[in-house]
Image (cartoon, rainbow, N blue to C red):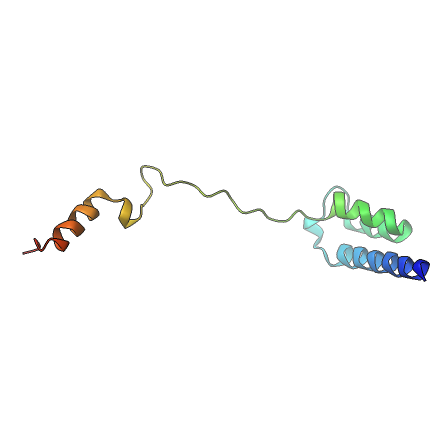
Length: 96
């Protein structure tokens, strides 16, 4: 029973790898051309799939680090001293 489950898992991994190679756009494939990746995954099922996931699959886009506001960057109202002075003046009733 364990052998059947392992075999099904390997078959599922092989099918996933093959489908992933086939559906990946040609421009996003890394290191070798897409037809060669298909051949590698088909000929060497488990190892080819592992190599595809590590070396051939496109890398996920990463989000940029948040940039702190610089001198020319807009700032929030609570960071603006002029806004805070105006707010305090309004709260004291001096907006006549």
